[in-house]
Image 1 (spheres, rainbow, N blue to C red):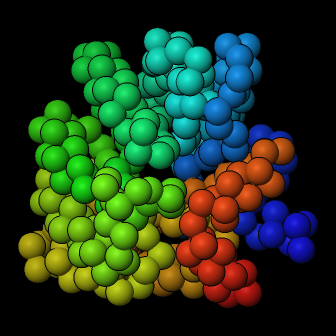
Image 2 (image 1 turned 60 degrees about the horizontal axis):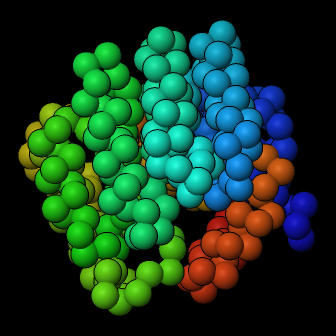
Length: 283
């Protein structure tokens, strides 16, 4: 089961595996974001080793002409050792991305790290030489997310909007799926109405249809935003969106840390187990 889970949702163990999968996905007319699995490193040297993988990916993406960017967790860049260390490493990656005409998405982790993550992204983006080369993720289940979106839009920062996958206390996050869905739609309207290119990350077909309807009603072109999904999940929906002229990006994780990655996500929220089970045998 582990091997099948790995091959369905994970590109492989090595960067070359991820690059090969990215090229395969590109041939379907779909863009990619590459994620080297791992978080919460325990030393500065480990953080630099993790960053080195991303530097090599950026070079390979440029050399091979792959339509892909990278997604980075700040705890993998040493955030829990030192916020300054994580910011320095992340800024170096964004500098590299800018030099290779690419883009870095700073991923979001649990709510205890939301503010420090946003602060780091905003400071990097505020550098004139890096403006537009870095973006961030906002999780719709957090109560604070509307205020965060308003601030990020005011500063011109690209957002990847998702529902959120961590177990959060009811004081900070909507506990009911219906409320999360409603907030996702409200925030998606804010993103679609902005002139910035954003990503709507969802596999929920009803929400996808609602976003398409809203964009069409406002005369928002299909190339002004993108839908984002996980590798191996709702491939049928991905194909249909591309066929209908929408931009689609697939999040492609890889690396030896795939097992603890899955176990943490499954332990945090029972809904994640059901989500994977529903998609395991889908085409």
